Image 1 (cartoon, rainbow, N blue to C red):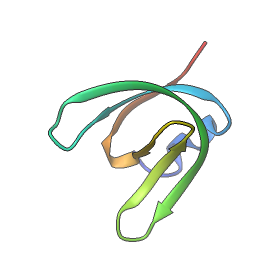
Image 2: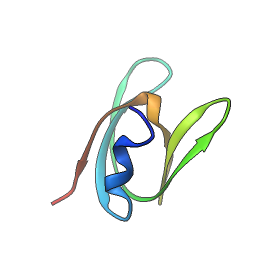
Image 3: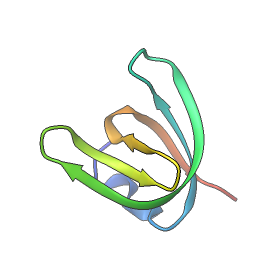
Length: 64
């Protein structure tokens, strides 16, 4: 996922599905505070509970 894709979720509560470094899928809900970019590592979601690298994200959907 590229850094411009999740910008529409800023300020929203979302459900994120991502892969960890072992390839296992995890699903978590978080409030998206910001989307940042670290030059060597790439973009990541800054959430209220966790930060998730965008290259590991498979699905982001808003909570209803």
